[in-house]
Image 1 (tube, rainbow, N blue to C red):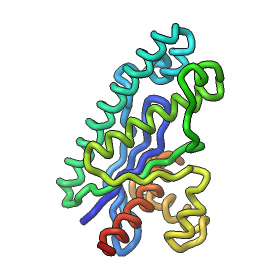
Image 2 (spheres, one colour):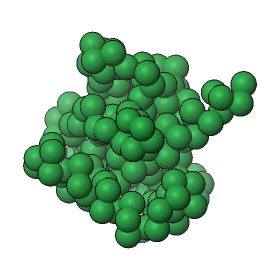
Image 3 (cartoon, rainbow, N blue to C red):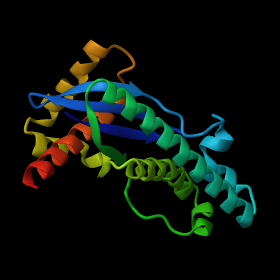
Image 4 (cartoon, helix red, strand yellow):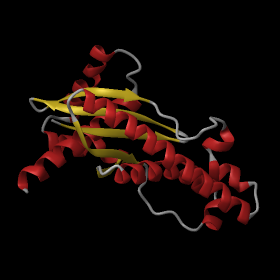
Length: 204
């Protein structure tokens, strides 16, 4: 039986859920909020904000160090989850991850010259770390702009967006808190990733 991992990412941490399908409907096998920095302070959770106050050489080191640490912690988190769902009899096959704008970022110098880009870059660093770690763990990766999540889900899963939201929200009544927007949206992108992977597997 196959499962998918879903991520909704913040600076320094992510909401993570793992979903399997039971007669076409999602069942949550796992959830947690792994940290992607060793030291959970503003300095490390917001590496581009920290780099803004440094020389360009120091800024590059700050960003590279943050990327390496985030990728390592992401691999550890995914490995832990993979072992946990295997113990439940499932194989983790793919991941879904929500994007912000999805636009490519410019050079480090241009990022540090724009406060808006600094905010964007902080989030993108941790998204990239999770995508890299997922690929390293052999997972098929699926990304989707968050602004397109419910329209895509309605198109590919069938029900209207309101019905999809009710179904995902209802999973929390079984699981209990926390079941916030983070977990709901991570679950929905994992559901989409798993449906796509199952369709691809059936076609091959």
